[in-house]
Length: 317
Image: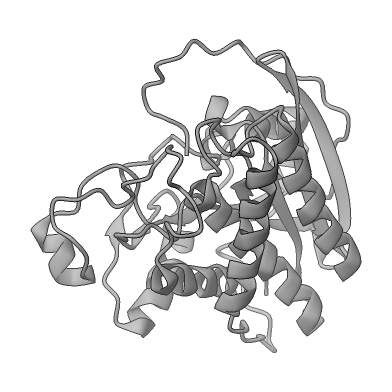
């Protein structure tokens, strides 16, 4: 997740789109009737999500300790995710842009089939800050979205709507990659996206369970899942407008998502609901070198990964 107030001056992004992602026409996702033979979302194996995190950690370690925009660690991260998706049968596209004098990349993966006039997207930013490997921020979201996509392939899921997954570059420089993607689409292309789900930091070590409140139907989908687990949620406010849902929301696309907290501090009321340490940040290693694989709460990562799959299945029937 990008900083709300950055201490550095950012060079304006000059967007040079190499690949446009196209599809059908407009549709309203959340209000559409459910598929008559609704499929149940699978459990997302925590071990698989953590294996992706371990790979991202190894990539950062081998490339100067980070996976930041324009650096070798980011390219290696993208190559890792793309290879997994290609092998699973996704149609992948790499979209190029320029930010702060460096070339950046988004990765877009489409699952064949489904109504091209109704596209459900799930995405996360793949880049880290330069000061650390970015395992919670945002290897956690990236790995959970990847494993959800791979679960689609393993299950042979054939949704009524078209499924698209995305990994964004240069989020930490000001949502550059996701804004590049949204700006590359004409109004008809944007209108066909019936929902965009964003996942940025979902394994914080002192976690909260926060749900975006931007679109009521998407919000309720996530709330229903956590209610089934007996977990109370709160409306997400710390990261409002600070992650990759913002360009979609500004373009009129319904958005939603999950968040487990960054550098805000946990209150006593929140600790009573969720456990953890009162007065400490949700993620004490936010944007720091200690944001490693040791900086993950397995329970939060597991619950949020399963919630991603639940929402993808529910909203794409």
